[in-house]
Image (cartoon, rainbow, N blue to C red; front, side, top):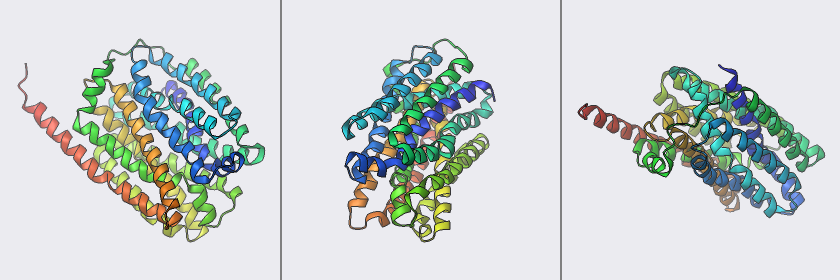
Length: 393
């Protein structure tokens, strides 16, 4: 794999810390700002909605400029946003800073995934995408546990100052190793967006992503509450357990990318089915400390085994339109699922069933991703049949 891929991985690492470290700090932020845990959960859904809005808008806005310039500009916004986190005086200003920073997320991963795929041979595309997303998973292995620990020791504001420094290092890596290329030729503007969204395989593929990750974040947004109030762990034990989650992310991400290189469709269905099974068994595994830790690791592995296969699927079916835009739409779909999961989880917590219902609701929503993917596959088969039946010039 070329060094440029590791520069993209460095950027993904910084963004991943910002996205996920908030889960380990929700209780601290809630106490400091005087809000409940469910209200603090809006910091998760607000970030995710910022990604949903920012992904297509910024991708369209930067479609005609060189991709290296785009990625470097996004990292500058990322650093400024994290410094704004640390200085936020209240909940509303912190939420605004989260949304501002989130605007860069979808475009970075969307454009970055296209760049990663172009750096390798066609039969290594899914693995290259998975390698870039390894930065996101390593953020959970290294950055999120350390950030959670740092937040408990020096305060959550200190965590985001440290994340800003990580973003600065990522900027340097991108400037040093990412090759300079001319602006892409597939910049079709708004017409490309409409063309992508008119394609049934792409549309149902995006729906599959939303449904799968709504289930993931219904549980993961409130993982600290589940581990402390149901599994009996202390707050200081959350960070080491999040490390297990991160290890699961790395393993699932790399295995999903490798599997998708050889059998793309099977990789999607197998990974989605595994995710549903893990979520369905999550409540039962919280009954004992050891099985609780195992459940967290399995959740990470199952969740991220879907990322590279789904990303590659959507990109492969956007030929003739803007591949960067389609890629960014799928990143937006991941985060729309995260936003909906955070909102759904908060509603479930406030219901009579409370925390005990979270895993069951999560499994039910993620299970809907399987028929959605089946519809995507059928739409793709019909598209190929139409193409093969069309007379050649």
